[in-house]
Structure formats: structure tokens, C-alpha cells
Length: 394
Image (cartoon, rainbow, N blue to C red; front, side):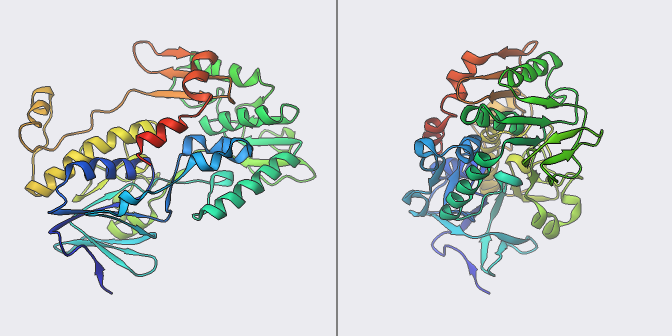
């Protein structure tokens, strides 16, 4: 099978994934790589970008034409000059040749000089979206009907997804019985301080949401309008929705590059430069990487900046380079090519509780927290929809 490539250029960067990290990296590289010498290919199964932080509102309510603000088509610029989009899913990676290539599920092959993997997460339940926009609209309509018809809704998992979905449901149907079942004594996880997590519990409980803590749902299929928890508690449930964290979309990476490429959670093992362990011209960024931090779109934007610098260095200098550590050496990166390590990010978590409520955490000093008014104005009211469209240049 022929390898698709741009014969007018000598080098090629291939980015797999069209989410925050993949498009964020594409946007940086298109401004900084010479179009006469390097091509950029984005491989994604969708001809549009999904603004994930806003989709929970989209699947609950048909108001405000939210699909048009959240499902953002890739514009013409993605297929201009040295850039192009290939619609499809990658099945395997081959990196044992002078120029590697990826093979799509349809058998097409796309060659690369440098490869960036930003494949994101596999979601379940109401967040398991199909690829076509018309199918997504059908998916949303079906879930809105389920929400409307259910009197008692149980959400399995009390992380950010469960919290925010509960708030969206209460906005539209305050009369419904909504219960969150969470395996820990407080919502979220131990990354965040207990004093804020207690306020997270209180923030959702004041909306009328019930919390069942230190417990689990083993069988999520309601029987006779009921589900039974691991501790033997019987809950009313016309609709049970998994709201646990997603799993990294990395199976084909492990199968292609070897199982030692992934950790036990399926995350890609990377160096501080975001180079995949053992594969210096392959990068991984976004939610799929084995970096000890909470996953978020904000982190992805910083991943993009570091990896974009390092991709340019690899293209210019090759793969056997020293990493530049320390403040002074990082300053020298502006004067000479050098690989930069990821310095990490401050933990920031705004939690929207419907349109008018919420709570936020900023992990500086002792941990600064904000309540309803601040969170509403910065996040809950519009869920960054206008900002994201501008930031992603869509």
C-alpha cells in the first residue's frame, strides 16, 4: 500500500488526534515551521473539534443551539499550504524505518519524520459520542429523551463529570431525584484538600442532589426501577449513568510500540520532553501521558508549547540531544535549539454546578478556593464556549 506524503517537502510532522492537544499543537506548528521544508498532517476521525468541557450541558438541554457552539468544524486553513487533514483512525505505528509511518484502519499509510500522539480518552455512557455530526445530534436527542423520561437518576462516580452533570440535570429538572454514588468519603480525589472537597459536597447537595459515599454500584442495570449498592443500599433508579473517569485511547500504541510503552493504566510513558520512552521522534501529549497530574485541557495547552519546541529541535538537529534543565539553560533555548522538559502545571479546577452555581480551586499557596459567584462568572455561565472557539482558531 502506498504511503501518503507531501512530495514537495522533505520532512513531515504527523499529529494523531483532533482534540485540545492535537489542534493546539497543530496551531503552534503551522505558525513556526517553514512550509517550504516541512508538512503538517492532522489525522482525526472527526471533521470537527469537540469542546468537551461543555458537552454535559449539550446532552441535557436542547436550548441555545449548543451543538453549533460546541461541535466546531475544522476550517479551510487546515488544508492549505503545507497542511492537510486526513479523516480516519490510526490502527498501527511503524517506526523501524528511516521515515516511519502510521497505518489507518482503512489500510492507508501516512509517513512521518516526527509523530505526535494526542489521541485523548475513551469515554462511556452519555459521553461516548459517535464520529459524524449528524450521529452526534441523534445521540444528544436520545439522551435528552432519557433524562426527560427518568424520575430517578443515579450517577456512578463523583469526580468532576458526576458533579457537573448533576448540576446540569438540576437546572432543567429540579424536581427529579438525582443521586451520586462515589467510592470515597468526599467527592473528587485526594489531589485536592479535604476542606475544599467538603465544600464541593455542600455545593451540590444544596441543589437537592443526594450523595451516597464510601460505596459503589456493581451492577449498573436497574431492575424494577432500583439498583443495589455494594453496601446493600437500595436506590431508586430509572436511569443509571457511568460518570467515572475515562480511559486513555492508547491500545494501538501499546500494540505497535510494545506493551512497555504503556503503564498499568494504559497511559503512555514519556520523558520530561514528551518523547515516548524509547522512541525519540515520537511524542505523546494530553490526557494519554504518564505524567503525575490531573488531566485537563489547560494542561494540554502547556504540553503543546513544550512539545512544539522539542519537535522543532528534533527536525533541525536530530534525535540525540541533551535536555536543557534549569532557568538559565531554558533562557538559552531562545538562542539555540535545545530540548525542554515539562515543568508541570499548577492544579486548577473550576466545577460548574449548572449555570449559576459552582466552586473552584487554585493550587497555589495554601490552596485558594472560590464559590458560586466567581465560578459562575468565569466558567458556569458560558463554559468558555466563545473563548475556546477563538483560542482554537475555529
